Length: 287
Image (cartoon, rainbow, N blue to C red; front, top):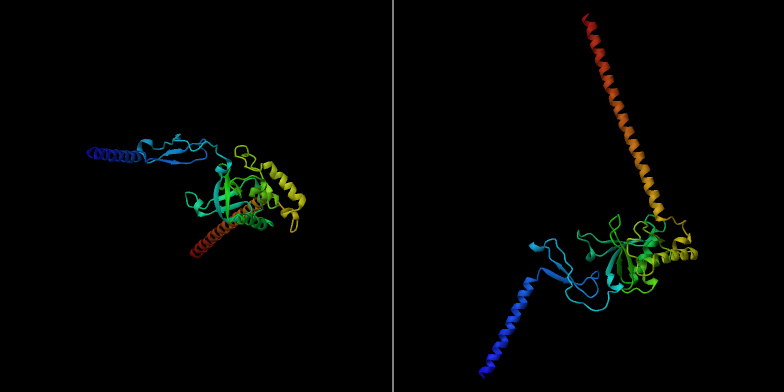
């Protein structure tokens, strides 16, 4: 009986020791958090050291902590599930607050590979409604593929898909906008090679879709209201008009300034002439 009690007490002491070791291990390693990351080689976790540790400040490491699984990372793992709250125009959407950036502003996505009419253009509202209808078919939930750094206006360039694992061209919302005649096929020529290509289809297929939309006279190419003007040309003409108006306003402002200056000089000269006549009359009276 005594032997049995001794074994039980030994077993309990061993368990307590293991628990304390685990607690100490957690305390020592609480500056490191583990997270899954698609950019890390397949089958591994990402361990990032917390920046508030004095000895490891401003230092990031990728440690091969333990295998995740033996399968390679698929394209679907690189897509982010997002919810669209607003459709701003035919090629720009705003994500909900849960996807906002660090400053708390809503994240705007500029659709990659297409260029839709501006809201102030003839077909602008039509393109916006078509994009809104496509997103509402998915209940506002889409899958975003990012294409590198933001563009010059601070918007994230992205492709929207209706499925996590897109298989056909019709799963690509950007492509369907061109196919339905709601947008032009558009390339960022200087940065095209440095940005990742869409999963499906390639950008060359966008050009084919535009040709098909022109031949079928869909959307922009129907010619119901007026001939469709490319947004890039429309923006260039608008900027040129605004520049000319600014130059005209500046010229008018300069002209008003010069006229006020002349009036002031004329007033001063007339005042000095009056003083001269007063002094001459005084001298005549004294004589």
